[in-house]
Amino acid sequence: MVGYYVLIGLAVCVALALAWSWWRTGAFGARAVPARYRNRGSQEAVWRDRYPGEAIAVAERVLQVVCDAFRFAAKDHFLVAPDDKVAEIYGAVYPRRGIWLLQFADEMELESLLMDLDREFGLHEFPLDKETSIARIVDAVLEHQSNT
Image 1 (cartoon, rainbow, N blue to C red):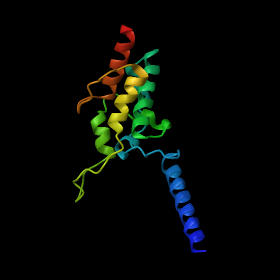
Image 2: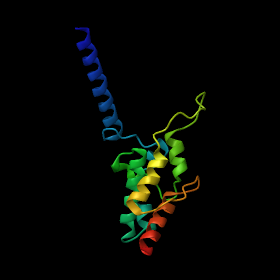
Image 3: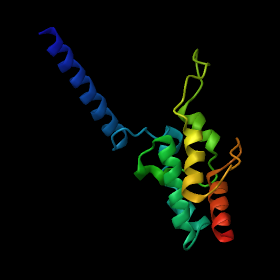
Image 4: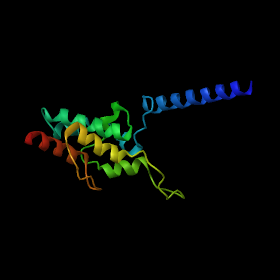
C-alpha cells in the first residue's frame, strides 16, 4: 500500500514540474530565456533590417538552431539580437555568482550547436569562440550557401 502512495507522490511531482515548465516558457521541457534577453523584447525589426529579403529566412533558421541548442522555446527566437555572443548567452544560462563559483555540468549546448550547424548548414568545424556572435554564424551560413 505504501508503494502506491509513493507512485502517486511521484506522479504529482512530475505533473507539477511539467505545469511549472509550461507556465514559465509556454512549452514543455523548454528553458526560460535569461532575463537580460527576455526583458528587452523582440529583436525582429533589428534582424529584418540587417538581413533583408530572403536572407531573413536563413537568419530565422539559425536562430531556431541556437534556441534548440539552449532549449529555449521556439517562440522566443527573436529575443536574441544579431550582435549577441554565443558565450554571453551561455553565461546567462549558467551564471556564476555567490558561493557557487564552481561550474557544474551543463547540457552540452555548445557542442549541440556545433553539431546542428554542421548537420543543418554544412558548417564543418565552425570556429566558435567567446567573440562569436549570432550574426557571425548567419553570415557564415550565407557565405557557405553562396559558395555551393
